[in-house]
Picture 1 (cartoon, rainbow, N blue to C red):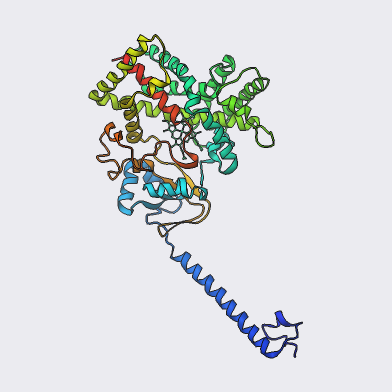
Picture 2: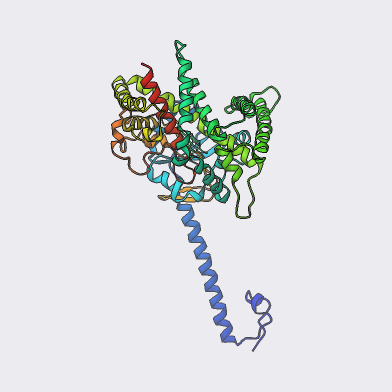
Length: 457
Ligand code: HEM
């Protein structure tokens, strides 16, 4: 028995333990073997990480990356050139961020669905301030799923069915205003229509007229700054927009207060006010306000742009317009005979018009891509997507790939006679953040087309 010498490396472990010399030798050998194994393992892990390479592509100039190229080139050719050169996944650097662009259904599925928890939604901070930081699309996890369930419940077919007559009333209003005009700005009018539908969906059809009028005006002041430079100085567009946002919150608070007193129900606002979690806690006023503004924001420009493209494609394809008109005239005759307004069931009997809408969503792809950020290092097909990098699923590239849509530049609704392959057609996104308003948007388009094709030439 001996006390190990204090100079030996093992002394740290054994200095107060009396052990037999042979046992001591075995123990020291085991420790050395374990330490070596750990070092070897760490070295192998490090080597493996080093071997995982970044996707191909150019990061452009220091700081500015390829931002200038994106803004000076046609965005379509920016993406196409790189996809042709590097393949379905490539890296670049735009708007101050390192990015990975992905353009295959498989990669889109990975980011939006199968590994969605590894990618969080990301927006410019100025957008978050304007819309409201508590709006659902800025969140992941339990808060997002609670709100998503509530918003979705407001836009399910069962909830939309009773709104058909209100949407029809808005269509007739907008179309009757065209009768006295020689020409109209289509996008402007489609925006007005989509905005009115969004307001009706948010507040219901029994609205408080004075407050809603004020909310509409304030929202219109707010949205003027959506694409402005985020410079919060007196006189700038952004500053004016933020001022409107604060006033809008106050006005919404007044409406919320009135509704909490139980005077008026309905719309998404009614659903959000009635929400309770397991502890019977409801949503706060600011959570409700941010989500109302968020839904109006998400519902307006998107739908208006698709509607504008829809009219343009029909205008450019007179034979198709003729066929769509014939389908709608058949339905109009039945509605006239029964002396009623258009119904939800009528909108389910418009197969050709529905395919024209699908083809418009594909061809125009108004949301060309979306943004995510990797919350951890992610490996995809041997490539490393580093934590903190932005990831952009390029919907438009997938929708315009000849592999999934032959002759992609041709406007051909008949291609939708067969259902597209999974993850090749995502005009409303996919996975946890997919669009809850897709059915409403399509309904708006069907009702507008019905009246437009049957009462205008
Ligand atoms: C044709 C019109 C529309 C198009 C093309 C469209 C497209 C999209 C897409 C692609 C996304 C997913 C974005 C992402 O994954 O990052 C989305 C999300 C969303 N859309 Fe739409 N949308 C339309 C109309 C509407 C309407 C009418 C509403 C109103 C209810 C709406 C409400 C939303 C909301 C609230 C989200 C966020 C969902 C979440 O983060 O969970 N959208 N939309």
